[in-house]
Image (cartoon, rainbow, N blue to C red):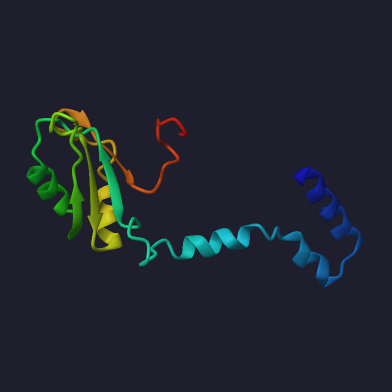
Length: 134
């Protein structure tokens, strides 16, 4: 339906050379996306600088993981969930103090870490998850 609407808009633009038609030809839906991309960091969003790290070797200590990810930037918060037996689940959440730290950590996605491949993504980004809603 959108393609037909665009075709009609272009046909109308060819028939009528007034300045008003040119402005209407640009789809208004793109404007909000550009504004959202202009400010990727929201200081009020506490999860904005949090990354999810998956695929961690179970033998790796929380201290070691925290030390390795501190190379990306200052860590504001670190959480490594454990299972019912108190053993590491192979995942961690790292919250950075700066957007630069977050961006540096995201570059570890897909890298070999102790024989396993890491999954590093923004914690709030649930679009690629394998869970029941993903």
